[in-house]
Length: 376
Image 1: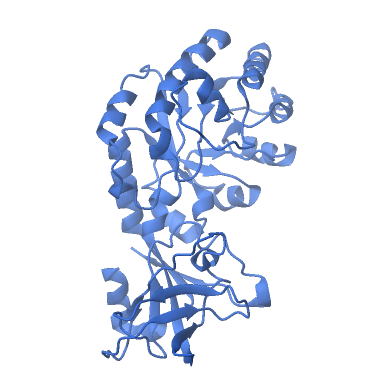
Image 2: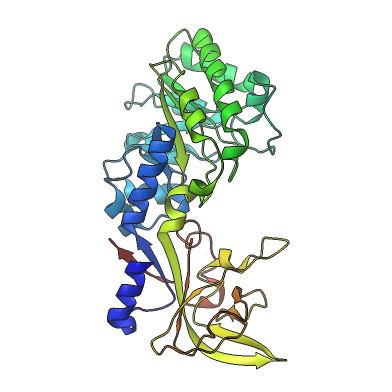
């Protein structure tokens, strides 16, 4: 934030809004902290933020590799040196062919994908694969697992056993498996998941009759994972009891990118409706759908930091809205004790580095997309 205000102090008129501002140093810091807390490899989930300029500048920090969920994402980073993991339950033969050509590690979601991949044996070199296990498998190996929301991803245990047998009979190298319990769910079941994973490793190796080499224990880290009361020390200690021949990894998008990104929009107009002040901004739901909180039953709007070229001292409550004609285009709210914005002020929203830019409604009304600025 200090770097952003310094940038605006120098010449705020050069900053085109609406825009996103990303901090390379914050991404690096988040990565180093998470890697230290876990003691494993950290894989970056690209769907959280696929800005190519940011990824290029952060590439030497993201040493654990990148998880990719579409051909479009793969095309953006195909020429890079980072380890690539392809993970999409609907990946078709075209996507699998591109994954093989790019020397990516493929995470198999279902038997049909596995069958398609077998067709490439002998034609192109294949990297050892990972099997994605549905979270229901964890309960079979550890009854202490707390309730996990059912989902459509990966394989149940019977299907996984079929996949292991297919790999064995077709000499398709199996590296290990991939787990995921859901967004924001890491602290809910991390210890129990690790206990189950140890048992799964032993059972798969017995059936496959070869040693595995890699296990992704999943992610689900929040944007403020550093402030959680989770016992990372005990968890890290538990992970040291895994077999030494297994490389452990976790994946995250939000945990690395959220706090490294900011959304900025300028106030175009101010108006009052029945004593309620509204700040009409040049950016909103079109450029940052998540700020509008439309998917939450109880909306808790963020309060922006106001950068004002001409400081003042008025204090009023204010609702910040975007530039579309949608009634849901409300992106922020502040109480009376905050400084009242003026026309031309820049509203800066924190924790907007993950999903805010990639999960949005930019085609609506053909309004302009947000610009991007990278701060070293």
